[in-house]
Image 1 (cartoon, rainbow, N blue to C red):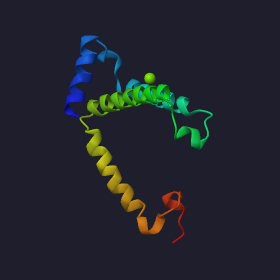
Image 2 (cartoon, rainbow, N blue to C red; image 1 turned 45 degrees about the horizontal axis):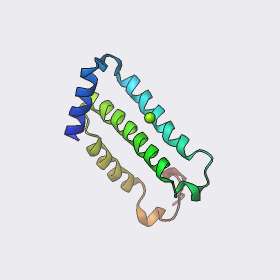
Image 3 (cartoon, helix red, strand yellow; image 1 turned 120 degrees about the vertical axis):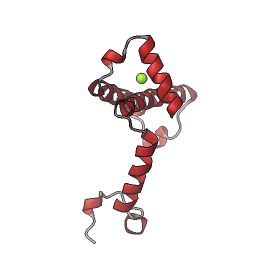
Length: 114
Ligand SMILES: [Mg+2]
């Protein structure tokens, strides 16, 4: 993660692009890239979305890279480690959604009556 952060900083610095990389712009860019992932799957059936051809797999990998890079750059602006944030969030979600309570259900945590 540190290495990726460094590469992204260097990439922006070499192009004098850091001036454009406000948290607002980075979050918007990340969302646009996430939408590019949606575009790959748009109009596919669930089944089709599980069996991408080589060209679509390649495209998906590129868009995942775009999202990840903007996410890491955004986190870097606030000194956050995205991996640490993800680990913390899994822990929080595990507390919110105990397996014994929610297994096999897609309900939101506040939709359980017990
Ligand atoms: Mg892209």
